[in-house]
Image (tube, rainbow, N blue to C red; front, side):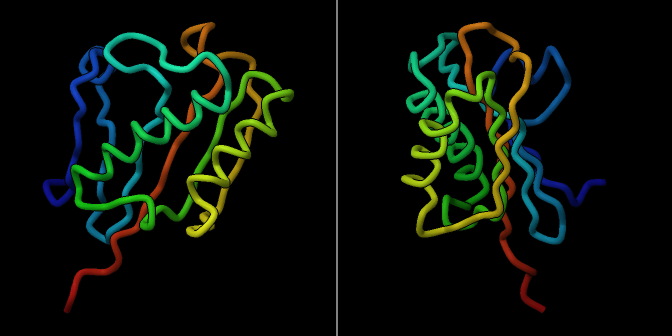
Length: 132
């Protein structure tokens, strides 16, 4: 599948676990792997609102490597470790995507890879069909 474009952000987990931060398919769909609020090996943001904003910023950076941005996002998924955080995560999502209005899911999970993380996000974006 040489017509796929892959983005790596250099995190240690990408090599250790064998994945790409983002993959663009030939049809213009871009899939961004789960992103957390870990920057340079440290969790940034202690609360759900801050972690959500930081997690989406990690995803936006990956999209930026492909020449895409927030306005190209068509779907988001938010994985939360506590139902009590729904309002904070939802507020962050609204601030980031209110004008974009992607399809979105919020899912409560039992935990993430680090107990200090309270949210992980996934993003799908769409470049559009290439010109004929």
